[in-house]
Length: 91
Image (cartoon, rainbow, N blue to C red; front, side, top):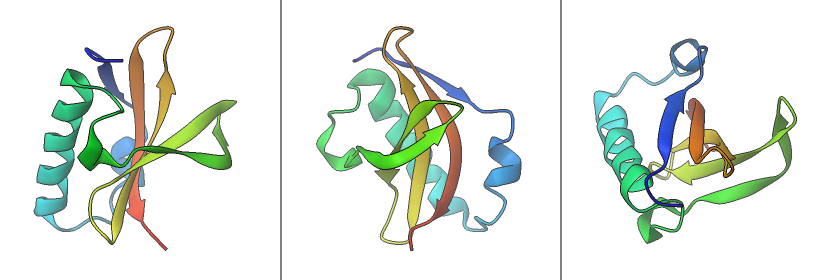
């Protein structure tokens, strides 16, 4: 799934307000580049589907930003696009 289109959900900024560290967003931007160029299989993304978690009927995935932060997104393989939902704490 290389050449994927990354789209931000309209509520992305509101949902990601808890992130105060700009370095987290810098890492996220770099990882989005990996998503666009290589796809979900890029090793450092550690992307995985979350069990029994859905957003508007579509399975939610996550990739690691750091030990503390994760990025949640949905993956539409037919459209070859990823919709970024939010950055959140990893509990």
